[in-house]
Length: 353
Image 1 (cartoon, rainbow, N blue to C red):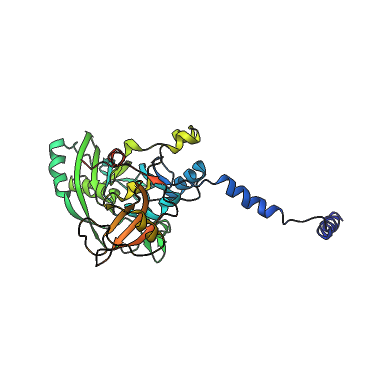
Image 2 (spheres, rainbow, N blue to C red; image 1 turned 135 degrees about the horizontal axis):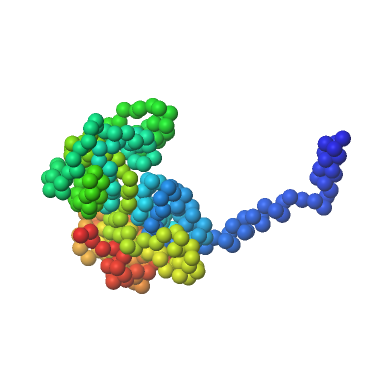
């Protein structure tokens, strides 16, 4: 009886010409437009433990009320540290850091193995019996074997994809997929501390290096049968350093104006490309999709990317050099309101030492 009354009431409401759901839809769209800000820049986030890179990006997007926000390459959820994020127009250049060198601080426990290479997996003893604690001199000597080009097999617990699925999805189902070995570069391994079987390292390496795999290989080379990571922190990527980064909690406690001051200009991602200042006519032509000439002061190779600025030092985007030394647009900003002086470049982008 009650069900019949509910159906009757619903039918009566829907048949009422004064009742309409249509006004509700535009209100939601308008509310989203009001809440979003046309803001662009690079934010250096000190990512917290457990948070995924995608979750961190979405949290920053909401905090800044940005229209778009994306990361420049994932950082493992169990790792903390430097995660550059691109807001607004900066997302057009987010791929620029994918091949950048990185520096990590890693803590290894020698003599034990983990199914995941870190504290998330099942821990087991790597060898029978007890081992003496290694000396620092012995560790330094063994670590030199890993400097330069080394070969790694990606771990099963990784985001590397096979047939559209990440390897960790197969690993969780108890499946093992054959992986091809790949070459990576280890530029520097520095011992920060050594206490019995706890080894803390700073690792400067190329992109694509799996620190968990490196830790296990170092443990084996030291005669401990392996090792696993208890902590991993990224402290540098390309020209950006962890000292420039802010935590989400710190940003959350700031007002909008103070928070926006931590956004770096978009062209900080593009310092490896030569800067070209265009005259007013060339700016107009390049933004109209036309080829411009007479703007290069020195000869550049065909297909060389260049940073483009107007006479007010506002960043326009990336251009590309043609075979006859002209410039065509490669990727331009929708609005060129990013201003950056050469002195600010030095503050935000320092060379690796």
